[in-house]
Length: 358
Ligand SMILES: Cc1ncc(COP(=O)(O)O)c(C=O)c1O
Image (cartoon, rainbow, N blue to C red; front, side, top):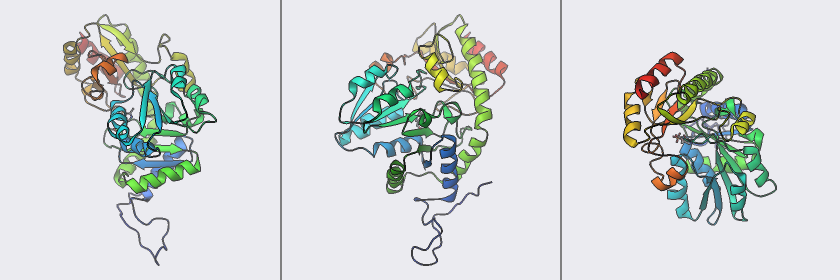
């Protein structure tokens, strides 16, 4: 097992004479082991770990300068939206949010100030799929970085660097950790210069993860493939159950053949994952609240990607920082319920949903 180096500083034999480790904000052997593991499973060359997914995104945004422009998706994770609009917009960076399912909408916003395209796919919580290769074509031969938040898919289902992305980002808090016991973020890249710039920011800003957290994610990665297989199997069964339920109006899951981007999901992902969202026939806030309160096996909580099933109410929880008008445009209505389907016995999950929905 990789040792957990609970070490802040390292012996030097002579000033500057060390064995690769000087101070743990810059490097720590347990973090290095995780960074190498992540680079390997994302088919990249350099991994960089941070104290949270948001800290990893923050590091990418620090590559930019005032006047630069960013294009992102209009149903972005609420925390990313908040970081973009409430923090980096104040530093003179301009953000455009478009329907990224349509690459044309992205192309329309590209100009010579565009420096970053921030993709999330599948999106949180609408499970829209963005065609990474199509967006990559728009950035080719331009000085535009393409970053993909791969949190929902995990590297088991999708490897954005192989599809043309320059940067892949993870909230390792989710599927990579897998047990809801750690908060950690990661970036993986292939380009050496980009890796150096990001490593500089990682050290200069100092938002690194601790060694124990790195160890927990390393342990999670060992079972990622087995857990993902079960998340996908259970996700499919829950999506099918909900789609056939008379009290359910709409289910969002990319595995359905009539999902608008099913074919893209099929080509860029290995399977369809364990995340889905649904709206009950009574799509009022009260009805959705009652369903999530009634659940017994699914736990009402923020976050996703752990072995235990979770239910969330995006409008009041994860996406509360997006104005109602904005979020409703992308489908995040008051009645929407998001499920992170865990790896429990599928009969227990279906029975729980049945009793909660009625
Ligand atoms: C898609 C997505 N990206 C980024 C994040 C932020 O990650 P963290 O909570 O580890 O900071 C989350 C967290 O929910 C997420 O769902």
